[in-house]
Image (cartoon, rainbow, N blue to C red; front, side):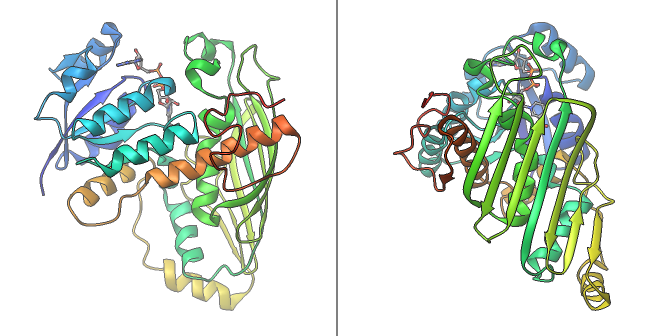
Length: 357
Ligand SMILES: NC(=O)c1ccc[n+]([C@@H]2O[C@H](COP(=O)([O-])OP(=O)(O)OC[C@H]3O[C@@H](n4cnc5c(N)ncnc54)[C@H](O)[C@@H]3O)[C@@H](O)[C@H]2O)c1
């Protein structure tokens, strides 16, 4: 098994990638370099983890043949150009959410992937944890039966101090609000378990903070599988919770309410009867614990790079989540339901920030 060398670009959440994603897999990854425009941050993170190679130049990393993986943890407005450049330089690429700010941008990245030597893995670390993974195994085994309804709640709290970081709260740099930066995780979890949406009605508003982007949103989805889903998001909840509750014919699932680790155990997994309970026991009886968040996502990424498993999160997954964002914005602007797929003829395909009313 070969050790992959990683360069982290952006030392905010990039620090968590080191702590949760790479250090627990020191036999698989070596963080060989860090990059940030902020020299104080660069020095602090470099000193903390003993990383000697520190640079303010992203381009310098691209030219370095000893780097296998560029891990992009910069603000959202920078992702598109950095992902395309890193793929063009022949690197494997990890990129934080949101991958970019439009479906046209994702499609540009997909074009770049076709010609690339390396692969791109977007981050969706909330998918990992015992609770969600057991639910996924039960659903994939066909035990849950017909999907009925689900509700997905991202009830977080963000105060003015959070928006003191200049890129946050602005369309030009954050690219969106609660839908793009916070609830995207839970909406990916929903679709990981229940598949894609078919029709979307949504409303967004800025009600909590004095910012440009939305901080409250609500949406009603008809999923491709026929289920009805309601999404509710705010950054003004005095108690922070994340919650998914999914109702199927034979099983009801409910996540923990932990805001940043809703995928962890214990999930409520409520069987309709003893027969269903026994079937569930058969598929999860031998459960091997799955570490939450970046630890498992990065571990599975290494397995993929070593030819031992699928790419855990794909650009298509990121596209699906961003297509839902686009549809909610479009519906909120037009007041009409939006059918998916959202194609190039949509007023929001090129840029969801374009106003349509
Ligand atoms: N997956 C998650 O749970 C999670 C959590 C937090 C943030 N994020 C995402 O991670 C990204 C970064 O968020 P953050 O909270 O860490 O932001 P941050 O502002 O704390 O950190 C970003 C860093 O990138 C640096 N930077 C900016 N432009 C750069 C460039 N061109 N080259 C090199 N460095 C550059 C900044 O100096 C800053 O230190 C965002 O897309 C955000 O949505 C994801």
